[in-house]
Image (cartoon, rainbow over all chains, first blue to last red; front, side, top):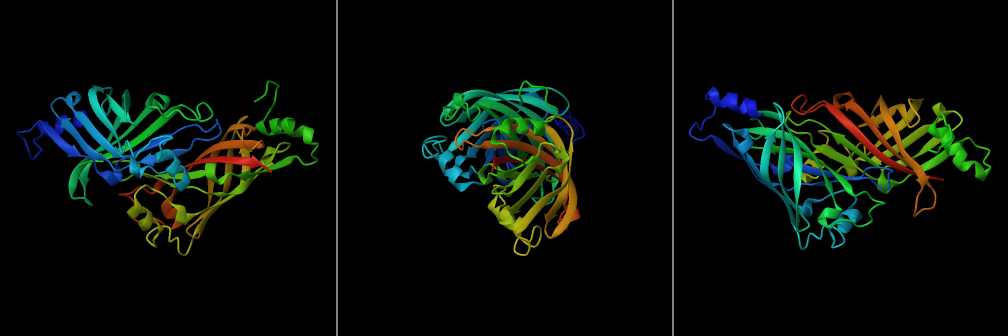
Length: 187
Length: 194
């Protein structure tokens, strides 16, 4: 993405040539964080959190200067099992009454390939902030005819320890290592 | 797996259950609805890969230890349980534009062939019926673990399976290719010995 963006600038395709940085907004219906964990080593249940707000400030001259600031609405947490959602949202786990959002604010972007980057930042869940690294892949930049806007699509993965965020109940029967599978669209 | 030289996971369950002096080589496991899910994933305009999930699948797995190829699985799940995290999308998917849940409220998978590929994996071919259309699909299945469930005190077998379909094969090809025809399936299942 970063090389492509530079090429775009060089060819003068941007309609706001005075600005090297583009502020793009996360599209909430196409931005999601799926979390997945091991259940007693038997299977890998998952849940999804949506309701994204926030921005990606894309620096086309120097992509490593780009920044991400995203907030997720914990009310949207869904595992497709309503009773389990109620348990997860309760004070036994995410306690969304006290902590209604989760946030990620980037502190560093390291390009790792033509379309990939490691984005480090402060991840705040359940009121606790920990360092996290997202392995991000740029999927596409294109005009979206449904929204009539040009946008970018990304996928990312990360791992975290739920104990580190004060969410360690039932460990080790239910695993501590959580996989995050992220998909995002910004316009 | 135990420390004995065991050729297949199916043979292992014979060892585990020999004390019950069962005359049957095949064991039936009932799917645990709360820990069985079918997740589908597709590509949206090439930008991102949204997912949706079905839970509360009902069905059974029969594991034949003596002849693994005789093992079988039969599953059905309610299309109305679809969950993408976006309510408007769930409604759209259930409509006549896609699944037409009013006419075809249930999806099913009945295995027709099991080919063991390693001690813990098998290719399971079966008839998948969605939207009233039946097509053969082969799932790559991994047995994650088979052990006594700590709370249920019965043997619990946990599986992960993957597969791919083209939704247009099932008459659900709206918006192809902007929204991908290819849909990846990720199944997680736990089944309790009966």
